Image (cartoon, rainbow, N blue to C red; front, top):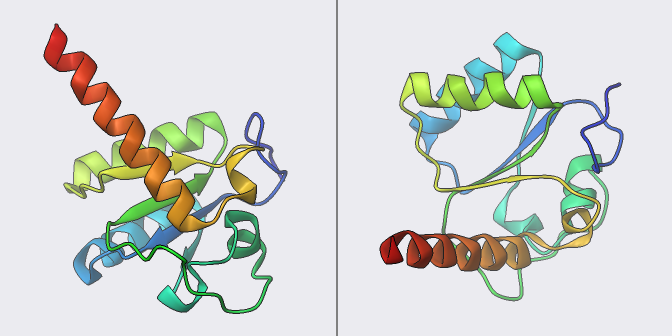
Length: 131
């Protein structure tokens, strides 16, 4: 198995949170084409850590701060990440919140990662508005 820089050594995998059915179908087809495992994380497991969701471990736990935003969390080596993101764009699959798994966020819950991504996005947009 390949290792994404700074992420746990695992098979290539994409976690899906709150992804609409039509988008999920397109993502599933892309994952199959790229030999990437796709895991749809049910709401009942949104309180598990990203690492637990990756490994299929941990008991069901709902998020302390439930969220409704669509999110993709990816453990993909560099070139595979590029192909995956290009494939999403080519298929017109827009998911605002996307994250690569890191040694830090692998221990976070999905709701914590959503909050961090939303904060980062807001800061990015604020900085872009200044230009």
